[in-house]
Length: 315
Image 1 (cartoon, rainbow, N blue to C red):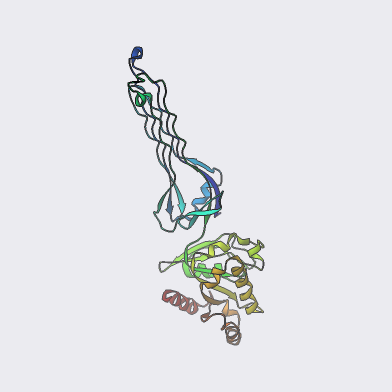
Image 2 (cartoon, rainbow, N blue to C red; image 1 turned 45 degrees about the vertical axis):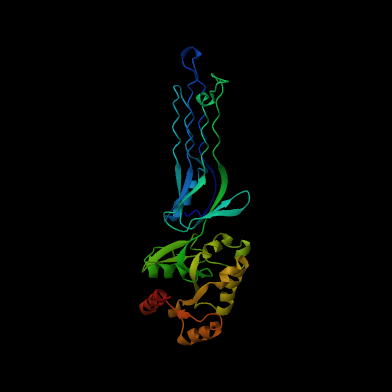
């Protein structure tokens, strides 16, 4: 199962307390400083399933600094903590609901929560007026942030369309993936990825009328289209009204975000082996004002698959 959203609490480590200590018989202060708390970083990795780590545990903290010791010994700094997140993760502040970071490149490393400073020991407070200070500082608290982690797939191509439009079958054929396929809606319950010719193809679960309001699989999957470069809009040749199918999906995209309507698009008339050339020409004629690239394709027609690969390699 792919988890694509999680609520977490990230913490920087607390600073260690300073030490109140004296040489034997109160001859002078020798309390050391506390160590600094560790920082918490996030690092972008290509593994899409990294948000699954938050299914059980949601609070993570870098190590606290060690308190100061006697003989002016400073405590060790706390160890930093690196949290690995998938490339494509948006980090949103839960309080303000504003995006504060966006991980777009593998290896990207961002400081999210800074550790607290260690407190000063009483050695640091000695003076001519107060040669034997009996106070030390407490360590500062590390930063704490309540966050929403939201994964949006980054892909060259995104397969979209109504349920049972043949998207998963096409992904399998293009990329050698092994997505579950069957002749009923919502076989695909999570987004899936495949690669061919160094290009990433995402299979976005089927959209239905009302998806932008939460119907069907809801808006949870619409967000994955936002970072896809080119949409491959699949319309089954089994459809009785290809224009209606097309407009249903486009309506839901627009209601979710008007920016999705600006994305480059190729219409794929899937399952083309099931219909006549006349049907295909009529479908093209109906859709030609909507898109300048309309391509019939079937997983049972090797020539059509190879032609599609050639087209996708050229755009």
